[in-house]
Length: 278
Image 1 (tube, rainbow, N blue to C red):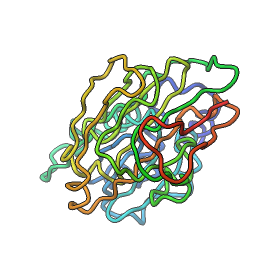
Image 2 (cartoon, rainbow, N blue to C red; image 1 turned 180 degrees about the horizontal axis):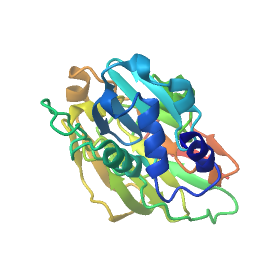
Image 3 (cartoon, rainbow, N blue to C red; image 1 turned 120 degrees about the horizontal axis):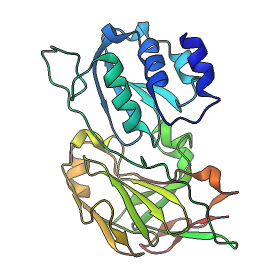
Image 4 (tube, rainbow, N blue to C red; image 1 turned 135 degrees about the horizontal axis):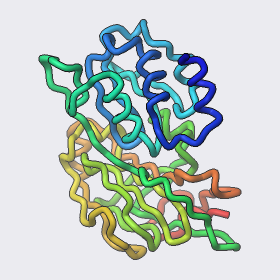
């Protein structure tokens, strides 16, 4: 039955995630193997009782799963923009409570409920001569494939670049709408007036800071203008806690465009031309 469901997921529009949830639960070793489940802006973060029971190859090849990563004690299933819906479906199917724990679990597990890009609306780019994305923060530009996070560096979530910030503020890279802000405040999802979906993710694994060092200056649903302050962050505190502040700037609907080009190099200043979408 699950084999048929796995095949069917590649053929139909994913408006519901129950089949995918059942496949994920099976491939991580079943409900009894789940110690806890949380999620961040892009991925499910399992803690498994026995990782050897997980069917990583099968799970990686499932439609709706971008990739699977093992890091420390976490078994991460990368979903992308629909991570919240998949998280909810897995919790229902595995009978996990509101904090991602099996019923009756004795130990707490924090649930990082970031709802980035969950609305799923379809918008097409309208600029015939290309769409410009401006730098949301000053700093050194790095090619996305060379950063330390394998999800971003593989461009599985989309193309773009990363910036090593020299400043402490994220500003709007275009006119648009704030789609989501991670509950842990480290990531902002935007949609431009021309249909670009953009993720700005401050730092590597900074979801673990649970909001420490981050101060959003806007709310979900706010319309923003290019250059408007979106988020303040404390580089010193983040670095002191042992986290990199490398900031991916990723076009998550890359497939809607013929190309996503990085047109800046070296050091950029906030508001400088960064990406060109055609």
